[in-house]
Image (cartoon, rainbow, N blue to C red; front, side, top):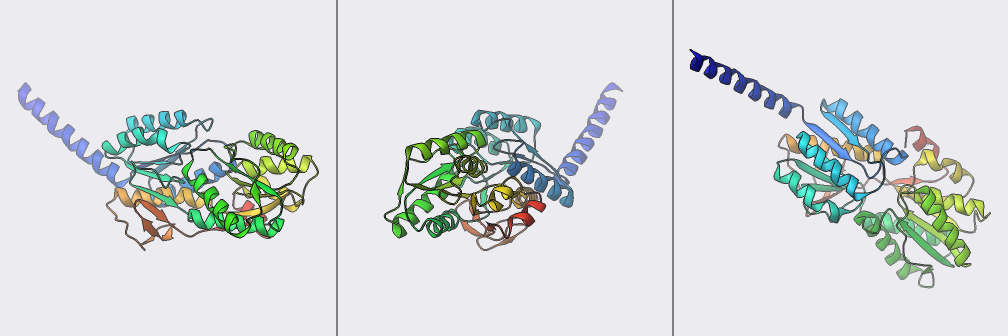
Length: 328
């Protein structure tokens, strides 16, 4: 009798597990690890993640570390592996540091996606809203137009080991070397662009040390704001051009004051949606091919594991207010 009861209980449990697994497959859990939480760029990304999760009926959320410390991202991914999520998305602070834990996630059968990290290896796909070459060159052209190719310039990136930021910077430098050969870099690039305070302090140091400084380009969400504050403090608006990526809501006043010239970026809200839409599609067996028209991303060019969309956003006095109203 006891054996029959055990067999029956096991059968019921097996049925419940099967039903639970089926339910999980129907409603996957998608988690995205940001570089750092609580800043406008990633607040907008989180909004996109939630909106697309609600639209698709999946569990989607963002994890925002308290600082741009790669170790905190590793810890977050470890936690998500332990929780058994279906998809892990990451915007890496240091791609190399994350490789072992991303491999662990894939070995567990978790779909792994990155953004702003085209050189990541232990992933299913990395997606970019605009190619590195296009984004870097657009900024270089704007700097050349604003400065007349005169003086020297500096470049800020989110970190010296952030692949996408440095790829954008490389493209900008290459274009300027070819088209503004007399315009030189004032110093090697600075990995300060995820901190307003660090980028402000660095800009102040550059202004003091380089009297011929005419421009600062920032490839990182806080660097443009920090550099602009330094330029404004020194009364150099219009004399030292500041351009790059920034949150429109955070930077619109500085744009209208003529301190920030402008820049090019993509929508972090749309990037958040893309994490969820692509993850959901892959969990449910969808395939990606070169030229495919994907949800949110649209037509993509596929190079290895990297998916390139073409969704640039131009930031200037004519566009910044409307973009800010979108929560960017």
